[in-house]
Length: 164
Image 1 (tube, rainbow, N blue to C red):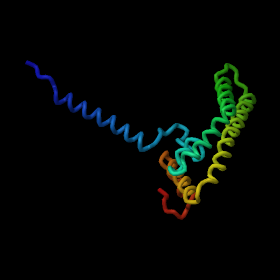
Image 2 (image 1 turned 120 degrees about the horizontal axis):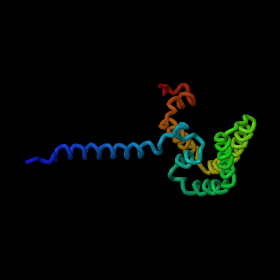
Image 3 (image 1 turned 30 degrees about the vertical axis):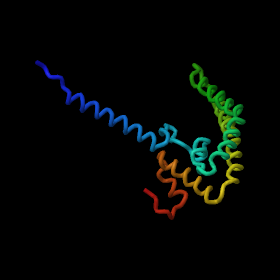
Image 4 (image 1 turned 90 degrees about the horizontal axis):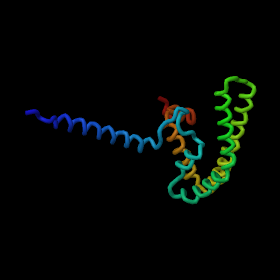
């Protein structure tokens, strides 16, 4: 008579469940996965929206979301320029000057899209108190540190002693 390996099955099940729980907790604590490009940047729409203080979040988010919607055409231009760069890279013949022009178009489009959101953020921040603005700054720095920029605090405040 063969015995079913209940203990082994239970051990594997517990180990797998602990692994899943660890992944879930890690995602929750990290906020978002780190990307190959280095994670969230200080002034991206996602980073700014996440850094808003809870007590001022609703009205400021509404303004910033409106600015994001208004930049739809600019973001479409970024996507088109990015697609052109990819198309040029995949082409059988490569022309460096054409690529430079495509990359310049992409840079210009990204800059215009970012500027629209940054202008709205600058205006929205006028509604914050100095303490709330400092909280936003601290949250942005914490995001960058969490996503791997461990020396950011030292660069912002060399006397902080936070250097690794």
